[in-house]
Image (cartoon, rainbow over all chains, first blue to last red; front, side, top):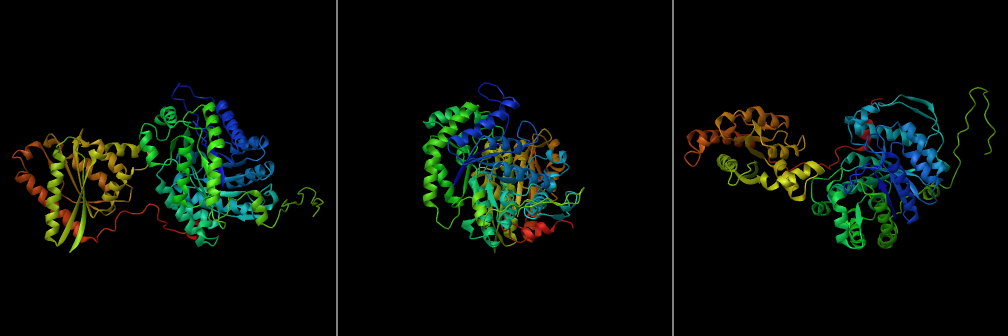
Length: 379
Length: 207
């Protein structure tokens, strides 16, 4: 099982001192958090993508490329990549480039984005969110698997004899997750391609997660990718920990009460009952997280949201120490001991290469359009 | 003999509440009308005051707490709806609107609805036609022609006087008739149900 963190990348005022970080501070903090994730033994760092204040990560592959250069093992991912407003051609190019630079330590998660005004900034319309996600991803899927693509669709200009470069590393595209909170069409999409399905699992009751994951599992089996319990499932989660649970509650409460999404609404106590949020001791986090398996089955990836709502960097790094030292080693052991042998682990570049029968260079050597000559190729 | 479910939503804020009193009389009258058509009725009262915090939380978080989920399912899964609000500042009160803002856009389509209101003076009565009726028209509900407004003078004798009584009976008969005509409700719609498949989603693209 993979464990990691995902960041929204919000610039939020710390409600305990009224101070907001600058964009530069927040960007550097995200990098520090990613490096810390590797240091404490986590597997995955995923960044959000946003194109409006108060968020900083508008250019995920720039950030992930930088983190790739400074880490050795960490798997770099997104939460989420906007499959609606990005050009699928640019996603194909950017993430294949990142894949080469990071030696395959890359996967990504597709999401639609729920902020209406963002869509027209990129020439799109939120009312077409699902059709955009369907058409754009279908093109992206082809661009990574077919060297030369002829394509025509509704939402972008046609492609004639187009080759997306660089070709995926070792001839194997990055693994893709599809994230959705309550759109059954996206669970269906993930199942159709045999891709992973990720549920945010933070701001809503567990019943939402359970319904969506079950639907995805059934449809995964329907489309012949394996049995329902072999489908690739990821979950989010949100925790705040201190050695003593009372200290955790006391310290986190002002951040909770003023948080961008749910602040000024339900009490911390109501929200921890109604959603998977856990505020308490590391043992409480372990106990609660182990219950996730009861309603989604054996799953492959657990990401935690740790840096949001204005929590200072120092606090976030302390949280990651607790996560890496006290929580994840126990969870890893427990989840792995419960997982039956026929349920696969989360795909990695190495496992995908092995499944494809080994690495192959997939460079496309084009004919030079000025000299008309092809380069010498050693094949 | 079939059993019908009637949801009665009342948005009165004081206790005891004239709004609740009117809601009870409308519910009883509708039950009697349906009984006359050979149907038994299960009355489900929703007193919004008891859910005021949860309604606000839902507006902010985007999901209902478990107990509010059950209330919303009661309303969207009923065969008929009686919706009663006090009139504040020329319209439904904020709690009433907030509650119906939580209802999915198509969840009350073709649902028979009786609208009613209370107010401090009869001059408020047309708020039913100018504010409450358009709300349910927007939700594609079937609002019966008679809406019922009760002012203080209507309660003068301690219970509904002759004028109010006749309006209650007429509205109840209209609602009962609309409910009676329709098949029994199959309950609230499942928002997570997959109503398409991927080939169809892909095929929707224009060539």
